[in-house]
Image (cartoon, rainbow, N blue to C red):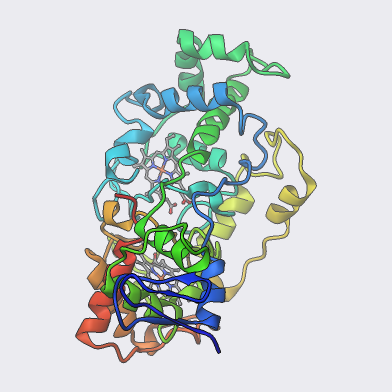
Length: 376
Ligand code: HEC
Ligand code: HEC
């Protein structure tokens, strides 16, 4: 088995090596690392959204994203919770909109790479994930008729209608409202975060001479733990560090108000009952495989307490963590995995997670690695 030894300034065989001694990556690890890039990447089109990928629609979506007129009392915009300066999250454990939410605000960085949206996957497109908060009484508490009336009075909006081909039925409140949501979906799709120290290090290992080898030793050791004994890569997989699936990681499923939040179990019910899902009347592309995704999703008992695997990119900007914001720091997250109580895992099939014999230094190394997945 070929081993790359990282020694300052040294070059072995075809590979450029790191700046610090002692950390070795074997062939299996290097192969695994291939799958964590390249980055930045381009997300697939927003499903069911014919505005996706159109520059004028992305621009319109950006304006609407910051527009509080999309909320009932005109005080809350998407950016109230998804603040660009806070990694498109809000820094709070639980979101606060028109009233108190039971979940943490998700970052919107790289959301376009997912298949299901929301911690519970209750949305099947970015535009459906924009409609939900507008109409939700605990988020923006808006109303389709009011929102459509306000949209009709905005010059930037009505002039964009002229770009829509085929034209939108501008007599229909609902059609105008969905058009606005699809423009927002087009905008949120392009929120792709920048290259990170990890990406440059990965390139330096895989394509000699093309990356930055000035990558901290602690992060290198953390990467080995991530790929090896801790099994993190099994779920946090691929260039966006998410397998796009749902798992139970032993986090609490009682919500702040003392009620159960059943995660994916609720999400499947939500997405199937959603008028704005991909099998509904407002899918504007009609791609068969995308409609099938939504039609074929099945509810299982094991979905109870499962949450969507989040991306691990840009975490230094998006604390606190997990669906209920109950872990304040990255160290808290690492400790929660290392000291996991297997009895807490209430669904089947999560045999990957077990208590990890990690030393104090191992834990800090894993944190250093996680931090290196953020763009400065
Ligand atoms: C009150 C705060 C709040 C507001 C306002 C808000 N969101 Fe969110 N957003 C959240 C929370 C909380 C979640 C997680 C929801 C869940 O799990 O069901 C979320 C999730 C999302 C997601 C899914 C991300 C992913 O990775 O799956 C998208 C997309 C999104 N919001 C877009 C928007 C857009 C667009 C608007 C404006 C139309 C908006 N949000 C308004 C709090 C908010
Ligand atoms: C079985 C799949 C699985 C494995 C293995 C796994 N994770 Fe996760 N991870 C998840 C899921 C699902 C969540 C969301 C949990 C929640 O919201 O309650 C999560 C959440 C996180 C978060 C919080 C991110 C955020 O935006 O809130 C971090 C950080 C994280 N995991 C790191 C790790 C590390 C480090 C390891 C290895 C020690 C690991 N994960 C192993 C599935 C997994």
